[in-house]
Image (cartoon, rainbow, N blue to C red):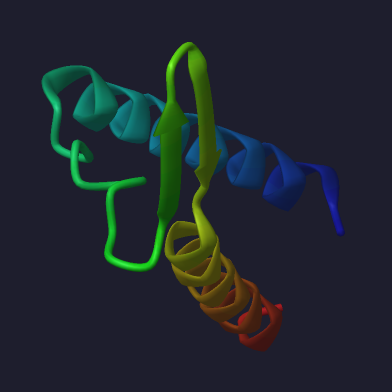
Amino acid sequence: MEPRSLGLLVVIVGVALVVIGALVAIGAFSWFGRLPGDIRIESGNTRVYIPITTMVLLSVVLSLLAAIFRRFQ
């Protein structure tokens, strides 16, 4: 990978992180982590949270993004 394309990739990733951070700050992802299938156990002072559905969704999205990036290289 040549330095110019690597620099462009770093800038694009940085802008994407800023946009995602802004969306999180305004509450656009308030549903994330509260999907059906996520396990939440609360008992007294103990809380256990197992985000199964959220992690499966995140894995699918990241796999699709990786496949898209591989096609364009």
